[in-house]
Image (cartoon, rainbow, N blue to C red; front, side, top):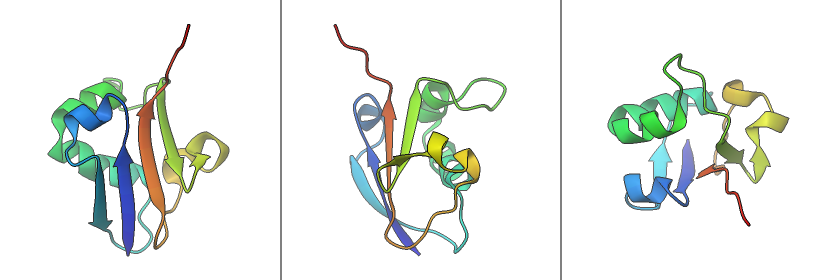
Amino acid sequence: MRIILRCLADYREIISPREMLLDLKEGQTVGGLLGTITSKYPALRQEMFEETGEIKKRVIVLVAGRNIEALDHMNTHLKEGDVVALLPHMEGG
């Protein structure tokens, strides 16, 4: 299956290009996708994950525009055509 991965804000500095089309196995989860991507980009792993392996609270992962916090977190299953966006929590002033 194919999905689109979009890396925004600070993450686009780590991953180039900012948007990529990825071929994944059917039934892949957000956790599996992030494991694959962060093994290719170790700097992204440092930005997104605690040493314990937990995703940092300031990391936002959207699947088809919905935060994984409102879905099944890292166990959220991906489907053909999903757009997964990675962005750090932005604070304004």
